[in-house]
Length: 246
Image (cartoon, rainbow, N blue to C red; front, side):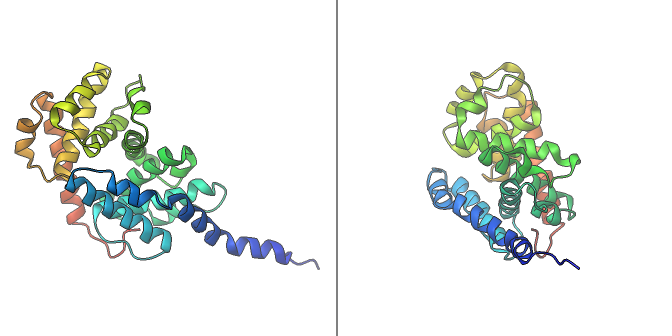
């Protein structure tokens, strides 16, 4: 009776370790450089927490129960999936928790798609959260290659909310953000402004009631919706904690 070749068993057993080793090399040097590249203290703090979750997930360690850390962990697990598209999905194994946690993991998966340029990175995300993947893709595209985000001619509100978040994280005065948005197709602007307001509240600590004053050139409805989105997600995350939200 023929048995399974020893070499095949060895390859299968080492696959997860190899996937993580590749992902760690892919990240090397990028996280610290990215954190240092953000001028606003609030943006730097959020990005640092994001990469803290990324590193923890890669190491198989507990991830802090923090929204930015959960998002970073989602990016890490999705990166593993994108780098080994034929293996089991690391991200799918982490899904199935509270809605807010899974939504943030899906946003992280979209970041991995943009970073890797491999749609397979998001294969572990359920279809109901495809909009969160699009959001993460828009966000990371702005941070990596702003001209690519500016070049999209089609209207995708989910993706463009991520573009707006990316514009806020990229920094600049409200007038500078408004000038950049004004150069984009008019049909895309409301969703982008919604993302700007979301980031200002969720990551920047701006009071929802103060968003209109801060971004006076933007449509009030878009700003109000973004502020409400941020408050709703923060509330959902706070009241559905998990011990290890990978």
